[in-house]
Image (cartoon, rainbow, N blue to C red; front, side, top):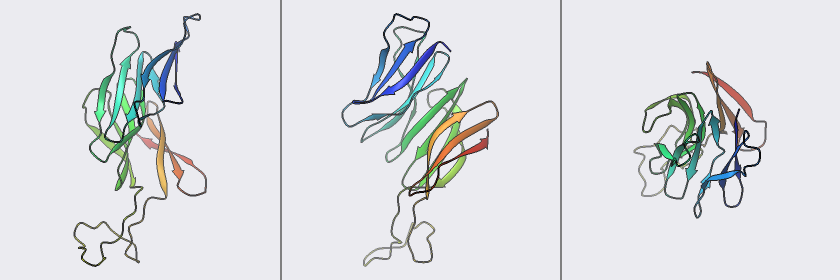
Length: 187
């Protein structure tokens, strides 16, 4: 209720305004570097959480706004080829989306560095692949395929998240046309 946080464009920045201090200018707490990008921020009390991605890494960071000289703390580090996105913090819980070319997951865990999480919802990945049937190719390690031998990407992408005391919410955005919807999943 005391602060407002938002993502400002070009280059991506996370900006925080203290609503109790009317004359104070908003302060920039994070800036994307190079070809990097920042997600929308999530704010719960004095805790601010956001995702940062570059061409090489993806992380979820947290900042204690009650401490003036606090530095961001890494809550999650994405593995190679993995994008961590759309974090939401509520109390001691962190909800986020983990994306790879093979799968999309909605993950809930403790809002502590390196804490394990559990998958609440799983969809196929957004990257399609062939069935491994080309000349000189092997079928080992193939994923389940359709009748034509292709591996199709998911029709929807997991996007914005929200969290309350009983449920986690995630927006599913269609890749081509159609309407987005919001899925409610028990915590």
